[in-house]
Length: 221
Image (cartoon, rainbow, N blue to C red; front, side, top):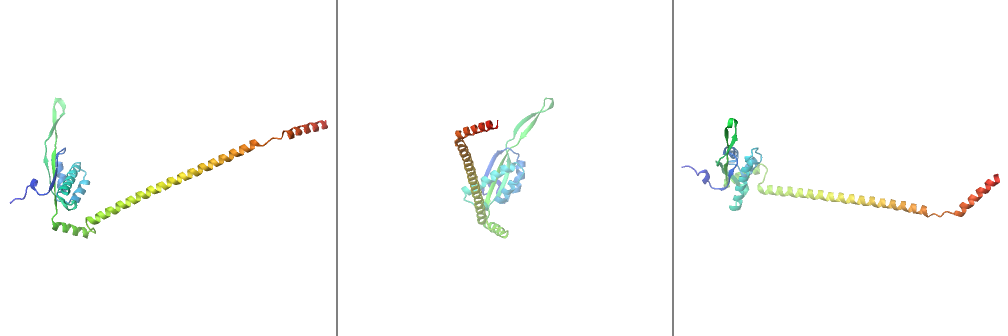
């Protein structure tokens, strides 16, 4: 007795229709993630150099979101149960060639389907034991480590903002002191100038001095 057909397999699915790529190119990437866990498949698609990998990543994320929202499953417990690409309609275009001829351009499309399912309990226990042997403790410690990293990054950002504010306040204080010192110097110079202008001139002494000088000159003669 044969197993269930690909489109009849149990699990949560997502599909993208009329993707502007050939089914052959999509199948090359789908063969890499078939049977992989969600984390491993997502990592493979992130580091793939094929442009179609981005569309497949969207379909995979949509299938996992459907499983979490509709079926109440946990993303870390899901794997790619099935994935396939069917051929879609071909867009026919024409390119002018020599001597009045034309050649056909076929723009292929495809329908991408990804089905995710939950590991059974035995496989989940095996995965957890493997993670513990690798020095991990599962999703709880991963979430805790992620929370600590986020908290540390926030603290560093707050410290940088506080240091920037202190530096700005110090610059403003220095500028204020420099302005006050400049104002004091200008005030001192103004006061000195006013004092020199207000000193009285003794006109009698000046006149007497002039007469004495005239008398001296007369005596010499």
